[in-house]
Amino acid sequence: MIEQCAELKEIEGGSVGSPKGFISGGQNIGMRKSRPDMGWIFSEKPAAAAGVYTTNLFQAAPLVVTKASIAEKQTLQAIVVNTVSANSCTGKEGLENAYTTRKWAADRLKIPEHAVAVASTGVIGLQLPMDKIRRGIENIFLERSAAPFEQAILTTDTKTKHLAVQCAIDGKTVTIGGACKGSGMIRPNMATMLAFVTTDAAVDPVDLKAALKTVADRTFNRITVDGDTSTNDMVLVMANGMAENKKLTAKHPDWPLFLSGLQTVCRGLAKYIAADGEGATKLIEVQVSGAKDEKTAEAISKTIVGSSLVKTAVFGSDANWGRMICAIGYSGASFDPGKVSLALGDTLMFADGRPVPFDEDRARDYLDGDSIVIKVNLGEGNGEAVAWGCDLTYNYVKINASYRS
Image (tube, rainbow, N blue to C red; front, side):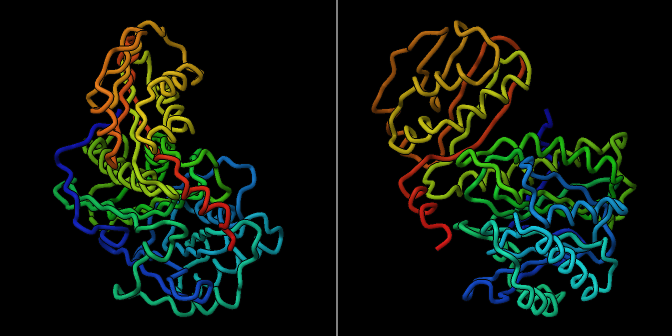
């Protein structure tokens, strides 16, 4: 497990523009009536870069282009994001439009084409309105007075999602910042979610890629809203080295601190996505301990938080522990049912494979809150994992029944 370090300090209002040398912004380019619908991140210097992407076999054109950009030199200097159109399942024209977007951005920013990543989110099957994309790119301005990047990337989200932390590495102040969007079609295997992380730390590209994969598996890949994995999921990280620390590798003595900072940012962003699920009123956190290994704990935590019956019970403040036990049983994990205990917050409901008498009123009052913790102990080892999700409400159906309108 990656431990939280006390040496990390959260920056109030921090985001992707917090690390040294990064500028971010957003604007309305006419894809929406008035809300910002294009955002960008720019680094004053080329940055080591890595990404993780959806496992959906229908991968949107922007993912193809971004993978090609990073593969060139394992660096990026800019990211351009549009909403409304996901540019997914759009064939040859869609791919050409993604490459054209990359070229226009590179020309505008006077950097190589391979230094630009592109990302899109919105409705699947729509071609990009390239006249609006071009005008928008021509109007990218590298000033911090731009509309917030975090606003420009939202779709059905109800709030912006951003976070930044600082720590000292090699006597230098290192900042790690992040922003993301995601509210529905969320079940990473990397969901419609996009996340962007920036840092002014100097980091070896190979180790940065490995770190992102490890951290994403324990954060973004442990959230769910509705069990759907989208075609556009992407998490990108850029490290421009402007903090002037000695280059971080897995062998650097401060590597655990950097890894903890990266996980803190990604974990915070992941929880923001889960809490802002479409129509959601409650964040659900499932903590599994006592497993024989982390993989077992992860399987159980993700199954419970993804259960529609658990999610609806939480919405209705119904302390129906049977739904939670049922989810544990069909998780595919191997364990001894006779050793399992389960608690809702501090209320024990099930122990040693049997029900335990509990105060229904107290449990209902707890479920009326906006943050619910379900605790499972398998009594077999030291493996543990946490997963996050949200309740399933009437509004989720309402939102998604008319998504395109």
